Image 1 (tube, helix red, strand yellow):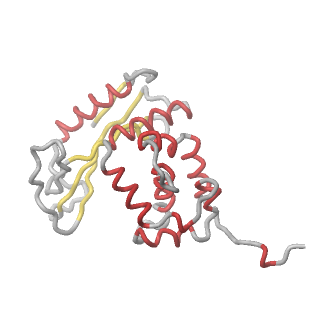
Image 2: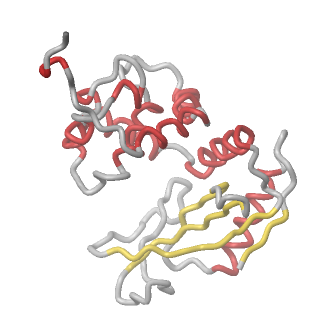
Image 3: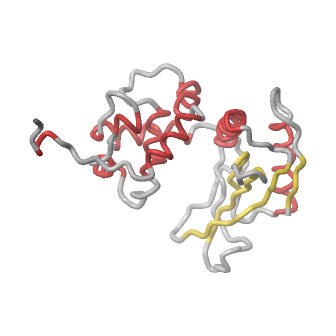
Amino acid sequence: MQTPESYVNERLDHLGVVAGVCEEIGLAAYLDGLAGETNHHVSMGTATVAMILNGLGFSNRRLYLVPQFFANQPVEHLLGPGREAADLNDDCLDRTLDWLYAQDLTQVLAGIATQARKIFGVSARHVHVDTTSFAVSGAYAADESAESETSVIAITYGYSRDHREELKQWMLALATAQEGDVPLFLRPLNGNSSDKVTLASAVEALHEQLQAPESEPGLLRGR
């Protein structure tokens, strides 16, 4: 007979569903394929899934506190055998974030979205394309490398959908399938981007994505 000391209380909650979806669409495996062989105990893909789970309830804490979030979670059930909460330290997550930063995230999401659509049978025949803005506070240096290929988006003043004209912002172009609002395409934009330009560009890029081999043609709609 087992004593009370033999039991460990772990909370799965909604995280089991999210981890299951990530596994079903092969998210970690897809990212690991992009990253190639590494000698890290926690792969880029697994660390990314861990951060997705963490972001659903612990997102405002510092990275070095992430192991606390997983301390009472069934980590092996969520992330695979041999994984422990202590493995998800700030070194592991910093390394993964640096790797993700170096990627073309528009292309990364396109690959993941295509893979997920095939698995779940989501149609992309009708697609909604739009942009939104994210107001931010604080000081942001001007982008001195705006003419270079490695320049990042400019956080600056523009038309605010939050009606916070006093704040700088950045923007995002996003396309979702009409069936289930599944994200298919995203592109971060400068804070002063114009919808007249960015929406047309996003539709063209998405059209090329959907016309890739094994993709079905889409009827695109923007506003």
